[in-house]
Every structure is written in C-alpha cells, then in structure tokens.
Length: 299
Image 1 (cartoon, rainbow, N blue to C red):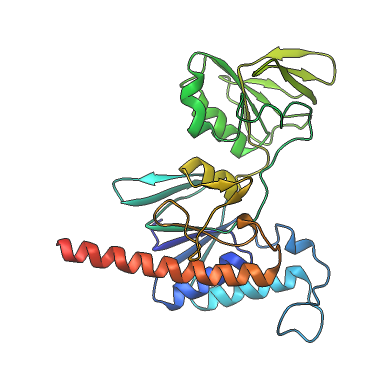
Image 2: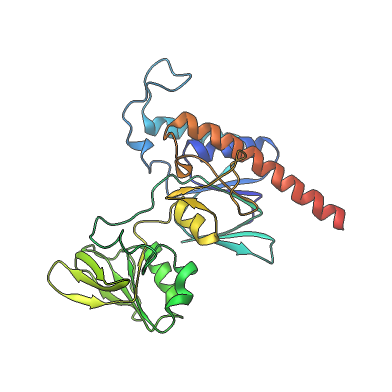
C-alpha cells in the first residue's frame, strides 16, 4: 500500500496531522491498532478541552476525531505495525504490519508514549550492557551468541526472527504469559515468570521465579506492540530518554520522519497532542511537496 504520508497512531496527534496533510491535497493513511486503544480511551470524562460545554468521554472524542478524518478521505487501516525501515528503491520508508506493507515518502509517529519494560531487577541496570530494545540495531553484535527476546506476541516474534540469522541460539521468554503467536521450532520457548536479570559488567543470565536460570549474552525487550519510541529507535531517530527528539517543525533528525503527541514528552494532554499533530501534518506536507519539486526539476 503506497501513500504520501503514513501516520502511525489514531489519537489526537495522529488525526490532527492527518487532517492538515489531507487538506493540503496529499493521500494520507493512518495505521492503528484500534481507535479505542491507549490512555485516552480510558478517560471517563474530559472537562478541560476547548469547544465542549459538557464533559466528553475519551472514547467518544477519539471516535469523533476518526470520523472527521474519514470524511475528508483519510484512509484508516487497523493493523499491528511491526517494523519501520528505509526503502531505497522507493526513496522513502517501508512499514511492515501483520497484514499490510506500507510505503511512504513521509512518516509521522503518533502512537503515544512509553517504552515497554519490566519491573524486574537488572533490566534497568543492564540497559546498553546486554539489555536492548532494538533487534535491527543490535543483532550484528550478537553473532554466534545466545540471546533472548522477552514478549509473547507478534512484535516479539518479529524481533526474534530478526535475530535468528545472527545468533547461535534465540530464546523467547513470555514472562508467565501464553504466547499469542505460533512459535517456530527454531526458537526455544520459556513461559516461566522472570525474577531477575543478572551479570557482572554485562547481562549473563536470566533467573526465573521457579528457581531455574538460563545463560544469555543479550536480552531484547519486545513487550506488547511496537510503539513510537521503539520504531524511532530502530530507524535511527534521536531520543531523549524515552521521548523522541523533534525540532520546532516536529521533525526528527531523520529526513521525512516526524513525531507528535505523547511520544515527544512534555505535557501529556490532548491540547498539546492536537497542536503538535497539526504542525507535523503541515511539515510533512511541505516535505512531500519539496520532494516532488526536486524530482520534477531533475527530470
């Protein structure tokens, strides 16, 4: 599926970006896990948002936003995004999801905040010392070694499959959950609850709650689904902690990649997300137009 602007996330930031880019004449696609996912959907009443005399529920606000985008011709695709990469032949980006593959010259990350981690001793201490959040980034460093991926869904399976051609052995640790995907025979499955991650200067072993332990050289976290931060990290966008770094135009350091909403940090409010989304949508619009002008000038 090819589009001018691919927006990841259907919350206030993503929909606001879509409205501005679409009204500028671009073909716009939003890919979302579902319009009722995320923190806003859990808000029973919102009383401090402009334009509503009476409180409105988070789900209803999300529904109205998506319906407005559809009215303008924005494509809404429900799917789980797994990876974002460069597409040299298309001169843009390629986004892989469970059921679709998307190509676009510009991408806006607006899938909310949060780098999913575990409240397990050793995880935080060994970040950058064997604990990783990006298989594409770090797989090369684990050639011929034993690594483990923590997670139980499609995202974890995707990360494990990225590691398989490099590592000697890849283990899938579901941390007490039953896998929601079919686990291939090439992966060693462990469903026990994780108690701790240990090592000296680097990760060396994982301890389970039942007393078992396994030796590993690296541990990759892929819990739940891939959010904005995970996708940004994989493609080389700069981060400030778990937030995506952007300039005043909501542009990242990667040309054509923008971010808006909770994933950029700061005030985690709808008003801020809508503002950043509008800026990102207009910036993506200018970026695509400039790209087209440059291509036309060459021909």
